[in-house]
Image 1 (cartoon, rainbow, N blue to C red):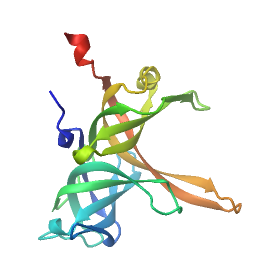
Image 2: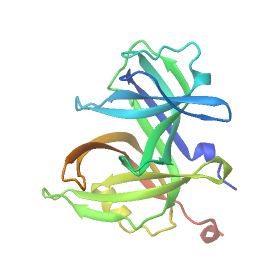
Image 3: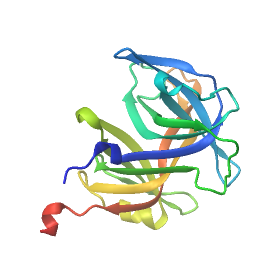
Length: 214
C-alpha cells in the first residue's frame, strides 16, 4: 500500500519563541514567516530551531518573543538560493500551532518520526572517547513528488547497526530535532559560527521489502 507522505514526517515541539517573526517568502499568494524556537533539554541545554509558518496560522496565536507554544509539523529541507551559509536550509514547517501556559521539560517536548530512504552511504566513526556515531542522510517523500533530505545521527549500538545500511534502504527513525553550532573556515581565512540541524535518533528500524514478505 502506498505511503501517505503526510505520515512519513511528523514533528512535535514545545518551547519558547526566541526571535520576532521574519518574512520568508510568498507562494501562490500565501505568505510565510520564520522564527526561532527554544526547546529545552533535560541536560539544561536547549535546541534553537527554525520554524516556518503560514500567515493563515497566525490567527489567535501569540508569537511575541518569550511566548510559549506547541508546534505540530514536519521537518523540511530547501536548497539555499544564495551562496551564503549552509547549502541546505532545514526548518520545521508548522501545520498546527497553539499557545501553552507552561513547559514541562520532563515530558517529551521534542519528538520526530521519519520514514524515508537512505540516499548516501552512512558514515560510521568513533569519537576520541570511543563513542560510536553514524551519520545518515534520509530522503523523505513529500506531496507533489518532492522529497526532504534530513541528516540524522545514530549513537552506540544503533550507530553500528546503521553503518550496515545501503543506499535505497527504507528506514524508520524516532528521535528529536537538535541544533548544533560549529566553526566554518571561509576562503578568506575567517572563521564563521554556523548552526547545523539534524535528527538525533533514539530508535530506528529497517523496513522489510514488501516483495521479501510474499
